[in-house]
Image 1 (cartoon, helix red, strand yellow):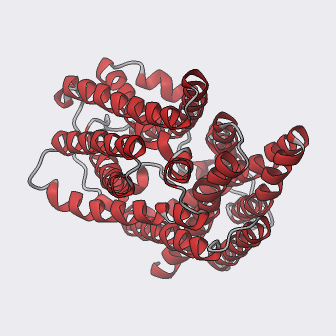
Image 2: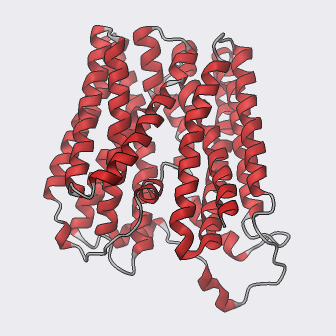
Image 3: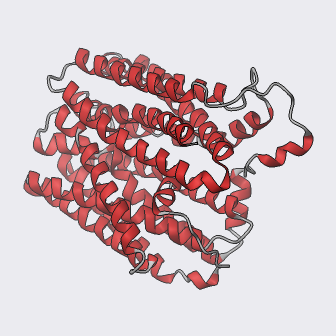
Length: 439
């Protein structure tokens, strides 16, 4: 099973790899070099999360309709191909928008949409396959391997991409995106080869129970709305995640505008964040034996507030060391918040309804990314026009995100864990982090 876990990890990492050029490089190029609206860039980059409800339909369909004897492989392959096609094509759409906006926008919707659909097709399929292959006893090890491979791949991709872009030009960026897409395709196909056994017989009616139960958006919301403490915790998660994740689309463009950093330097920011995230992951596993989960969540929130204040101050005073200090602190805070809040969520899950509550977390995560990105883009654009100062626009976004974290901590203080039907969790810290839905 170790080999199959590694293969699943290769697929997981391959899909994540295709996101790095879009979220750490192209967003900066579109906003800084091409002077496109941050709102537009945020909307295009958020298409995967806009499409996320379709995962229920994809998962349910693949449960019951195997192709050529494979239940998951064709859908994973389709998703991977769409992701690769998307990441290879998006630079053309971006540069075309700079020359012919409407034609470029049409191509952008198609290319970003291809990546978004590919992400949803692949992720729900390989996670379902991971559950089926590993079983309850092997799930923790499989998810841990997949998650570590994913985060390490993101770090290495960011470093490699930054080196490819040392002498930036349109042609160099297009070539770099092609290289990343090719690596992702090879990695994903290696992981997929021989992973799933072919079964040509049709499943019996009773065999449907072996598949994980899938819940619709409406079912999750209905379950969550039945408990006031769940509602409170859900809104806490939304506020916290919107603030923490909303900066994704603006951090690299901000570094370019505030400090004149080249494309290769801003691309490397993702590797700094990823390294700090892994450090916190280890620390959280050690600290939670001595510190309460609520305290760890509070520490993560306070760390995020401090990070956004440092980043805001770095722009106002044009201080690059302050900026990197804020990025490091943000990575540490994100890791701590992710682990501690998943622990709280698991503790407050009603026995027998685990799928519903994990679905609620998934919805909070996906839509928080969407709302956070759009909020950051819109506020940055409106503030820039209102004050006629680009730097003020960025600073207002980061201060707003710090304020949202502060409000989320107020909500956290009102949450009563004992009001829930307790369910002790034996999940290791790495699995909890992976279940947060980062990928």
